[in-house]
Amino acid sequence: MTDPAQKPSPADLVTDALSHLSRMMRGEVALARAEVAASVRVAATGLGLVVVAAVLGITALNVLSAALVAAVVYAGLTPAWATVVVGTSFAILAAVLGRIGLNALKPSGFVPVRTMRGLRRDAETLKEGLTE
Picture 1 (cartoon, rainbow, N blue to C red):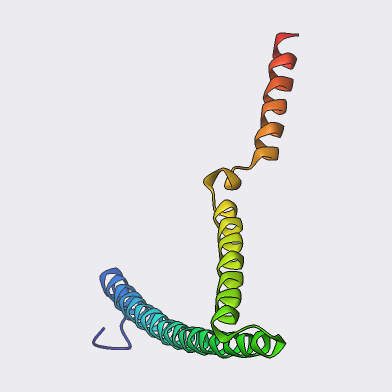
Picture 2: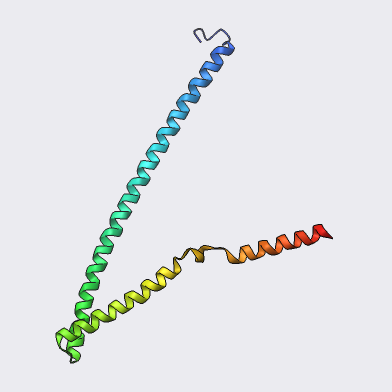
């Protein structure tokens, strides 16, 4: 559009519309990229905090284990036997919790049994309704 006093031609209108649409799409893509980058930064920070928390948690468990060994020694066992008792207790606890966790993760636990039972009943009801 060279002269504002003239009516724009249909081609000029289409060109302007496409130009505006193109700018708008570039702006939306830039906004999406910025949002994704910000989300990735937040997720990376969160992951870093979880790793630090895990390291501190493991360290705390080691310190508490040593304190438990000291308490068992104080109760009358030798340091070697106290260490064996505490270590074995933790190993048994870890095995039991691990087994429970693995059983919870079996694929059969994710099958929607009640829903499938209901769908079968619905199908049987439909089949009966169609055969009557």
